[in-house]
Amino acid sequence: MRLRARSQRKVAKETTEVTTEGATKDSMSDTRSDLTVSLWRGAQQGRYESYKVPWRENQTVLDVVTFVQRHLDPTLSYRFACRVGMCGSCAMTVNGRPRWTCRTHVSSVVKDGRLEIAPLENLPIIKDLAADMRPFFDKWQRAKGAFVPARTRNDEIERIRPDSTARIAADAAIECINCGICYAACDTVRWSSDYLGPAALNRAWTLVNDVRDDANAERLQAVAASGGCHACHSHQSCQELCPQRLNPTASIAGLKRRTMWAYLKGEI
Amino acid sequence: MNVRLYVWQRLTAALMVPLVLVHVAVIFYATREGMTAADILARTRGSIAWASFYGAFVVAVAIHAAIGVRNVLTEWSPLKDRSAGIFASAFGALLFLLGARAVLAVVLP
Image (cartoon, rainbow over all chains, first blue to last red; front, side):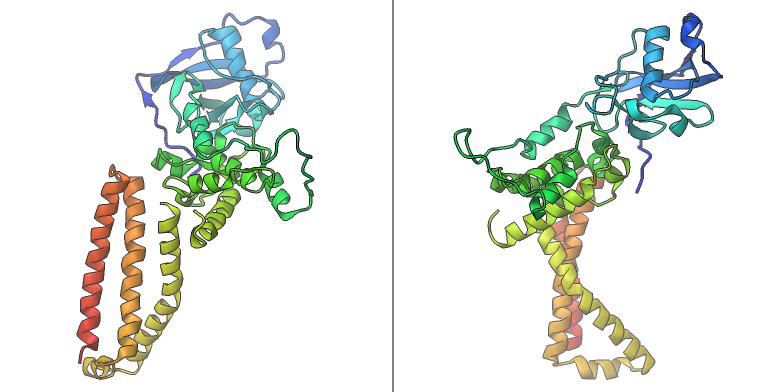
């Protein structure tokens, strides 16, 4: 298992350093010492720029990035929304590993007073720390990740037993927030751009186990094709780094079994 | 890799588990007993059992290895699925021919 991502970004020139000079006195009032933060600037071609950011108790990596944008360089681009680990917008590569930055404390990832922050791996870069998530969500579509109801609003609501085997399997994988961390951590995605990736396959697994869904024949066909679940090498980087503590590898293993039996029965 | 290749690779792997164990046991037996080439050929020539055993082994290896090589090529080389499939099929055919030649050499009377 290789957790440290091999960077696909190309460094254009030497890094430069920006200090906290100019930041307001208030914003630095609980400073102990400075963090050295290297941020990726540019698109696929770019460079790391270093910034000195005040060290604080309980600050997150997203706080650090926000400090840089608010006080040191307003041209810095990055993506966030909820700041409480629900929306999945703020994932970035922090010291070589993909992480949700709003819930990652600096103290848990800082190395020798330094942070290196880059956009997510395995995705094109729009600018600076913002990765283009379109390939990620396109693959959700390819994996038939949309719910297709078997009943209409005029039918009686289906009763789902929470202790049924299918529902337990769906519940174990359902809390994905689409942050893309598993996708960025996946070696197979890096090697094969055609591979659907852990999140899309995990989503397909939840729907395969949803008795209310009516598109499982097409879904199993989609995930059993080239670039589908059988391409997974079970390296388990996805489950190692999933901030929601999900286990996409187990979901993919479930899809492998389900599609294999469907194939042997001639259903797909 | 799609489900068809996955099933073939797993089925041939499952088939090879007992075949490898018997093959290794035969190697140990033949060396510990100090059997000569002539002793071994005396037992294998004309034997339908040994021909079936190693014939199945060769077929399983050729299929299993070819699928594995195809996967390596699609992930680690610039080859696309189709080119990798052609190369891997050729590799599997070569393995089969070499293996079949070896089996025929020891089982034909």
